[in-house]
Length: 98
Length: 515
Figure 1 (cartoon, rainbow over the protein chains, first blue to last red):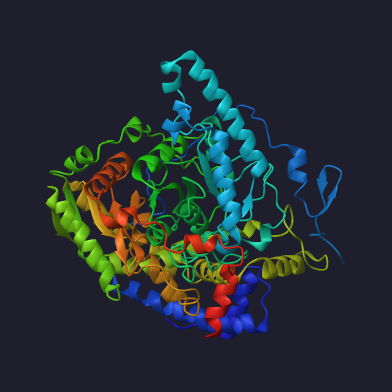
Figure 2 (cartoon, rainbow over the protein chains, first blue to last red):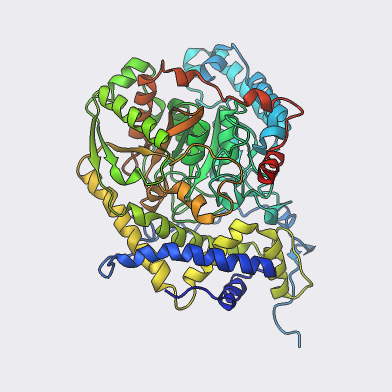
């Protein structure tokens, strides 16, 4: 499988919402390719007829009763907010602008 | 300790004071603790003493009915929520965050009357095998202060090994309880996936993470597991499987425990004696296996043919899940928020500066493995290979094996910096432990001797929900080796850690790097 180019690394960093410095991108390009080389071993296995395993215990669709439960203490939750206005968390504008 | 408390020979307050004093005295040299809660611990200890005194007044039946952990100190890895306290997960991005609620297991410990001493150091977001990836500095191993304690639950392991706490909790995603337990000479267990509720725990890889106990012997580990295990409505992956009371009834007599090994059928997976394994570690493991055979256990060599694929599979599945789990650290609702106000710029700045190098590496790997065009080749392929790895184990349980015996780690504790330059070398530290997470099985590491003065861990792996049986085997091996010389050894450099002039682990690591 083809390796990751520098622009691939930048693209993945953008997808992951990681602001990386030049030297971090350069280091990651080498390290990620080294790690991806280790993955090549998996291609040796024929897995066409093997179902994937996402989890190991056979529990499905666990639903709780629709009963009102106490929620987290509002003041304690808001105390962690980087910016607040009364009982609201202030967030940067997501829509609009210009 | 529980017996001394019940007999009135010591008090919970006295136990808390002794352990707090040791932790405070040695933390500059070991860095095992990220926070020590002296006030909360002493309050909990006094409440325990009140319960003990009232039960003592009522007589022996009331004393016997007290929970086993009442008044016993415990250390928590700093990714377990304790209401009103910090929960950094070893990361800058959670600096200043105060947990608004208790984790399920924290509630369980409080109900049991355990005394929470504080929160322990760890690799950032539990990603690492040496504790060198903590944003708050490395942890030193009390057996040799220039070596790592393993990771990611390195602080919890050292807290127990250094006698700062008799019990600790950690999490294990690929070996993060068992490997540090092995490297610090104590007992550490990863229970079956689904055994313990993860409500209130910082998530790393949700199909693999499991909480488990550290202790200095199997009976203490079993009592701690009993206190935290069981179904919890708030974690839909916690399984409705009864928690066996046998965990509280492990054999007390060494001879009886060892006699219980007779007739047990143990598999020795040949793939776990990997190339590059330290030959002296292999000798200790083979000696332990010979001792088990000598006690009447039936040991047969077995094969887990897909073991070699475990590392690659794990390092796709775990980073993929981590990249999704760590998306929540965005500086919007909690934690520091950096940037100039534009939402994308804020994300990039907050995450770019809040995460350390190993977390960035894994988030990048995981994002790539899940990205358009690569999902089938990496993530789906890894999930299919995971099925093959799990089937290898299933066949052995169907064949009637009671447990598998293997090394926990291919090496003893290594020096600071030894594996930091090459992520793949670090990842190999977990080659013998991560298949157990991939298959969702319980595994335990127990001490089995020393190699050049450093502890070696023996790993026992069992079928799903067989924790009590595994701990019974561990207890058997303890009984068998009760008089071995290495059992009475304490961490060789613990006394040096008490020296107020001793360098910090970060200073030791820098000095080693300069050579």
